[in-house]
Length: 260
Image (cartoon, rainbow, N blue to C red; front, top):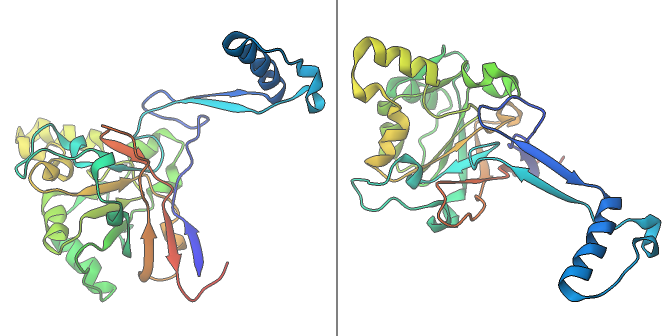
């Protein structure tokens, strides 16, 4: 069994549209912190110098959104109301949604913007595969090569409403992409809306989640490392953040018959 990491790092050194900070407590400061905490809360004394090299445990404090790095969007992310009832938050979703057979589709030939259902049908035909209900569909756009730069958030391809509904009609409930969003870039969407004034042009892939329940994995990576378009398992359970519209995931692919 070969395990392929499909996750992008949470990297405070890269460019992000939302603030991301990482503060690390060193091992030496960890020893001082231990002494102070034991004194304040338990009235006990310990000299940091008594610890090996005067060090204790490090700790990291991260400030970020649930949409930073590889993450799963829950139905609650798409709005407070849905045609099918109350949208579920990330902690309420069945964990078995996120450990399923996968298929990866090549969208690298598509220009910036969004592809439609016909494009997805053709992509599935090229790999001779029809997703079974609950399969996880991964979209290889190639956008992950831009991760860490501002272009990652503006130069990629997503899905339009017809493409999302086509996959949902097949029984898919989790769609993943190596791009920033399942929709077209924000700039592309707003420019189109300014021309058409059609509200259906505003984030149609996300807004499909107000009509039908599904999840999306955004900001995947290494989809080009998958050795074949299907015949592997995707495992991407999200962190169980109570009441949240998304949760971070360490997504991997399990490829049988191969070893690292």
